[in-house]
Length: 374
Image (tube, rainbow, N blue to C red; front, side):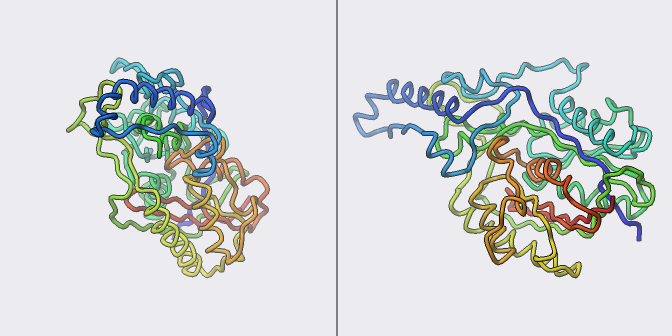
């Protein structure tokens, strides 16, 4: 069977960022506007007043201190509370493709490859900006890749599911190499008017180049020792917005159909699911938890990550065993574990083993065990 390697990764980070202090200030201004406009109904008991957020609440609940975004002004406008990204002409490169091309170009450079060496593009992310044509085909065209491209969505696990799909195609001989691209404008589906979730997401794009082991020639090769995926239906993380209900909410206090979750249920149900998946996957490839050097976990919530790592290792994990990028990037959906891998893997020596692991809505979870070759 053909062995598959990760030979390059790329990371695109937006220029703009929002601190917790800035975000909380805008949210609290919105709360004051809402309570003022609905004062009569609130007094009559027909409407519940909104409560302020705080920096302390955000950091305790999530571990997030700031996040990168594609548009800052629209998010911080208390009368708008969502990014303001102008629609582009059909002839222009879409914003999602633009982010993906940047990350993909960096991945190709790290792998010492060009578009001519790639057979396919998988754009795997939580929120595609249109139904069709596929963003992946647009990325493929922009990069000048001959072959094919398609989109896929498994929420926060999209990247790991994309890696298995790409690796399976290479193993089967239907492709020499596959680019897995994860452009995430998570701020576009976040309800910034919801105190429980207004701080969660950030924007970013990542890319991973997969190749047959014998064909790769970069100095940054990681053999994929195994992949394992799991899904289990749950309504506890949900986003109902789509082209069938595309009318945007208007006015202070308007209800939208964007991201919503039951955080406590998610925590209680996802943590054991992910920890069990990792331990089971390690066992299937003949490894024990103490043989892995690092877990690059999905960056959703610092408390979840700490508990997952503890359950896998049977003890508290230190920062090198489960690195965090959540504090500066926030939750970037499918890209989070790839960002952690991109930033915290240079210290691996040949033979060192780690796990890229995702988890999110669905529920979905994906595990990719990698071993450093060069």
